[in-house]
Length: 352
Image 1 (cartoon, rainbow, N blue to C red):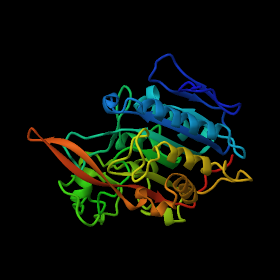
Image 2 (cartoon, one colour):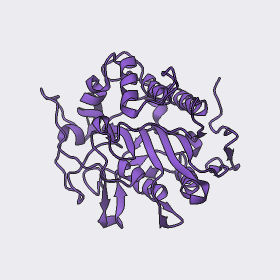
Image 3 (tube, one colour):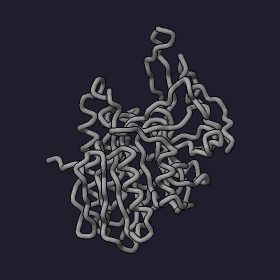
Image 4 (cartoon, rainbow, N blue to C red):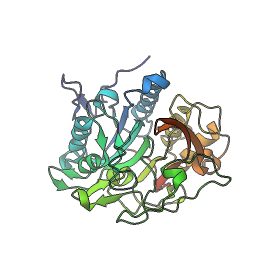
């Protein structure tokens, strides 16, 4: 049975909604060391054309992850499903204003985000190579600068981001696209623009910067990993890293739909994030101990690929082909994609 998109919190937290469908008001009883789980989701308005089951399956994933946090045996999370109507700028702002208010005692927020990448106007790719990065929202769409302003400020004053763990299942919102803070980049056609023929050897992305501040636009943030965390020094291979207090998982180029098969498998994609969170919250452990991020990635990979994460197409990279129209002609372009893990793979989702 499906649950409603916005659910009642446990005794530690109460979710209050106004009648306006795009407004998310969170009023949680203040508590020191509060940990909050957010589930977000919004799809391209045209998703029904090619993926008629995608929204239902993505909703099931959000509900499943919600239930894992709600039922965490050794922890007590304040948990919110904010997908669809509440995944917009107003919903983001409302939740983060609460989280950034020091009087509320929030110390750790985790975000699961399933949705679509909103491509910047191809005639205005500023800063290069892609311009700002966008999520589709409900009433309005959300870019990296919007996320940064909401995650890292409270009433105009800077705060330390509470968005400690982010799993963003959205195209292009998790790559290294520059090689310095000024925005210069090594042009990798297979990753940036697509190629008409798949080369014999997979490309190597020599860029090692996942976010910059654009001084031409009021020093606006560009790049979602930087936007959520305000950290430019996360390890770019966090699967093998044990340093830092933030972790960001995202995709370089294409991310598979929940209703599609995982790259290189006959397993439906939704099994991976569900199994990941199952392990990360200790449901596979006889003592309900939370597994850290890299071990949870391995657990999900063994379940879906039959191997550790580093051996999967997600980590090693995979090709996706897209038909695009160039000068009124259909052309098939091939893109090299991967799941990227930035930050601290040894991080464990906390207990309250």
